Length: 341
Image 1 (cartoon, helix red, strand yellow):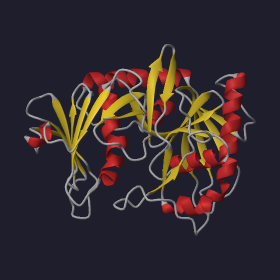
Image 2 (cartoon, rainbow, N blue to C red):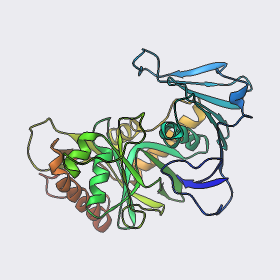
Image 3 (tube, rainbow, N blue to C red):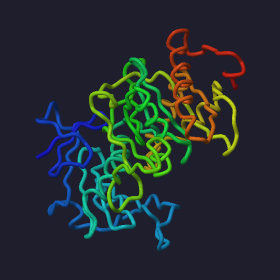
């Protein structure tokens, strides 16, 4: 057996998950047991869900939905079936995961599903809310970077690492209420990047390793001692990234969001919110409402030119320091920080 700690959960698995540090021993109560290609699992008797509740609008090259999710006939397990043949079954309490995949796929091909959307669903089942975001530590607090696809969440997190900060998590950010505050739980020491970002930060000849031969994304390994944050840290601020049009110049603009606009910005960046769980969605709305009421939410407008990443990181870090020093409604000069109702 192999043990990992990921998003605050202690995992026990029959095969080590690529890219996730292995613990020498279990250091607590097992939260989730993972069976990879086990011969005795719900997958061996059930290939299709009895009730499909989600079909992805994104299609593969053959026109098939990349993901179908449903409930198995026993009512105790959820099914996640990907168009490449990879299948997962999750116990509805979020304490067991079973996985299978066809040849010639490998565990390296399957791992991005497992550490991303599959554990994203598990977090929800266990009452921890996942954001589609990246998180970085600044001092003893965390910031979360959210934004639409292509906004540069992972790229900005990688730039922070190269500027001397620590990345807490990439792609999935586990948000948990801890008393009167909100904590961000550490992920694993990697940042996933498209080739364009790799070349912008490391040079045109750079070639970071691919996530797997079956994926066209690269990963930047994080030094566990200097670039990866292993602590759970309180959430100090949320930054909604927006890129200006290519060719647009000017300083980074930080706008304060409040009320409905801040709530909608965060709600639009929740992760794996397909479960037909009305009570869970109500709890999520309540939690996000408390987050917006307590945590500063800023909109960032920055140049599309990736050479400006150090300026972007410096601006966010300075803004975060002003929040900690003066308070969540701290204001820089109006040309830099503008409040929105």
